[in-house]
Length: 341
Image (cartoon, rainbow, N blue to C red; front, side, top):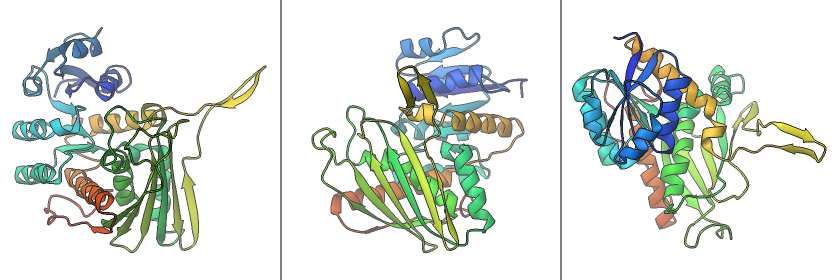
């Protein structure tokens, strides 16, 4: 392996451009070797000022570019499966942003392909596992001092939804983070989901069911509720409270800057996920680079990506039917631990 890990970044949009910046300016031990995006002008803009970076419209061409030793996939979810499978065939380590693959059938194909390879190559980008507060809560729950977890109360709010955002996307795009966080924090699988719908907010686009209250059951007897509200109008807020037999613990209490001027004092409110979880993204990518350079794979696995897709699909069915929907996972290949920690 070269002194710096050569990374091909697939996707140069909002998320991809941020990862290109991160690899170039924040993370140590890696460099951007290639970038792929259907919009070549956008790709060239994202790599402006960087030397020895090839730019491609075809993601598979980027995988084959000189100097590429690993792949970071930050393109839209439906475009993930093909480069994941191609990376496996080349033996290239991959960090893939969530959703790994939006539909559970495609996600299972990825799991089966990696299992046939015989070793893990993919880390899935559930960045909350690298957030300082989430990691402290995980350590506290694993330590057992609060007793058995009974419930998780979660909040997920955005300022506004982007154009084309659908009611189903509140679950399979937004709540997918809580799906993985709940599995990881509790060390349990989610077995059923129910979606309750208040009268939509007047701030939501016409036809969008927003907010929603999503209730999950687990195989360990815990309950997880998620308030998802993507047109709150005021800020990006993510909170989680674990209620256990001997106590509770809450994270996400707006770690914001207090600004004081002659006009008075005000608290800054994060406006999107790249601000709120900037440190978590930095830690996640640095951990991926470090592990890859050592020949290891850590973090959320392809199985975790698959499980998230299955649970999200069940959630969408529950939203559409108005009833409780069970979750059915395929048999777990021996390659994966029960729930990645």
